[in-house]
Image (cartoon, rainbow, N blue to C red):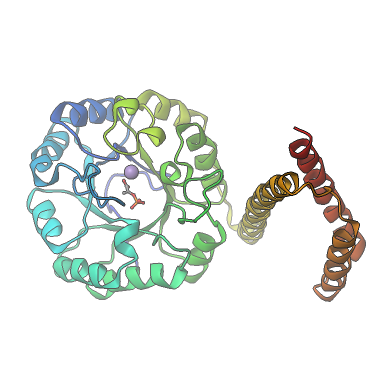
Length: 352
Ligand code: PEP
Ligand code: MN
């Protein structure tokens, strides 16, 4: 794919920062948030007008009535404005109102018919389009959505990594599976990729650390949810931060610059980081299951340690490890540490 910068003019290229509320709610909320962001030097304002929600009865956005408020943001702050589109009608209305950048949300990018409808509506325009990853960890579906826009003549494309849905939510609202955007970068190296730490974390106290991780993994920028009064937000209240919190976050953010000589090393390190993230997530999941087993054992008055079971695990994985080129003794040490911690947690549960 021959991809152009999302905005070819006066924006610094890295990191690209897009910030604004999950939803456009009122003219006051929109303008107040936008003005504070503009004061901190943010150049691209986001705000959802049409909100595809998981359940009926939730706030589905103010729709077209908010378009003049976005136009006012442009006039009063000179920021570029971006909104989510999920149907051809949204595209027509947004473009007519002068919206500069469109994005396709996770629920929409999961649906090839919806993506094609939007891509067809965009044919003949050169508006930049951001494509969020689909809800499921399916790289081909994500690339497929990007291709539909590209084949419709959209060359200013950008991907947004917002994490993937999972049945058993743990630390994150949406599991990052960092290896997927990293593989996307390998497959389409010229495609800019932003990270949306707000939807990955789902909690405002996680926003800063996920943002730093993303930049450490060489993402091209961030799309963040920022609201003038986050606790009063009509959608995604728990994950929105104030403009002041964003200012501090950006001030502390370490932007690493790559040199050509270290490109290969950086790429390898990125892969290592992704592996470590996966290991950590898997470990957290394993501990969660171990605790569930602890409750089961308590209920059924079973002993915590069943040595036969532990011996089986070590033997089975020991043989597997050797075949995969992992030292059996190292693997044993790792499993012993993990098993010891599981036992400690189960003993705590059983003795409560
Ligand atoms: C959003 O950006 O507010 C949004 C709805 O995100 P996603 O599509 O990633 O859930
Ligand atoms: Mn949101």
